[in-house]
Image (cartoon, one colour):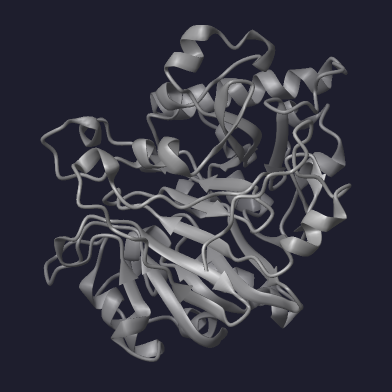
Length: 398
């Protein structure tokens, strides 16, 4: 069932103050779109209350060319996926799992960066995306020269927002200025940030973009302090489990995102997590674009016991998604054919493994979280040119 367009009172956005809307939306689905961006991540979550979250981005400039076969993610977002606020397309939250370029490519040119009070007509014409709340780890403050231009731009925007807290600016928690720091480290940049803006491993986050949310929550697994301060950037990836409710079905959707984290990080998660419910999943993004490093250091090694144990936490028929180029029987890693085969062995069969570039097909992989659980969602294809991408889906107010 598609999310329906809701028309609240003309002078309002959707808020919990309108209980009739809450009742109307009680059984609405959540949607998760894994965009086909090659070896990279670009994931859009549309929650049942209309809020939107993007986990990483990999906007490839070539995708905007008319004669390309690449999927135009930006066009799809702007055509039918995002609401508008302050005259710009609006994303409630953007999460940078870690500052590799394939997780933030063209962040600096596609998003609005700066004081939201200074949005110009040019920004509106360019349809730059306004981010309500920026999620990132302190890792970006441990590097500078090693960062790509896009990560440096995100770091600059994070510093701008954090300075509002240091200055006790009255606009520090306005839309377009909000922050959530994932993980803790001994860095000067965090000195003026209140504890409720920092979520460390083991914390549950129930707020998004300045509102307490009742239909979903985020359990933070990583990064831990030691990894943030270490040398391995992939080990600093934000790892979180999102648990989603639909109607009277609590936690019917349990989704894991883990950036490029390798097997040692996942082993540590198994060791440190006290409540098994925080390890359950029915949809898992294959870490590091289906790299074998989720299983072991070398593709010739047998999988570590911890990797198999983690996969054993699937709730019902688990689905694994590889955000990668097409997986082939070659020496690539990522993606790795041997890793794909091992995932399939631990699942209920090949039908439960999906890739964003399966057999050369260039289209998003979309999941719907319903009262029955997680299922593949097929959008109606349009017999039009590439710029249409895929059929429109109506969205809600967030």
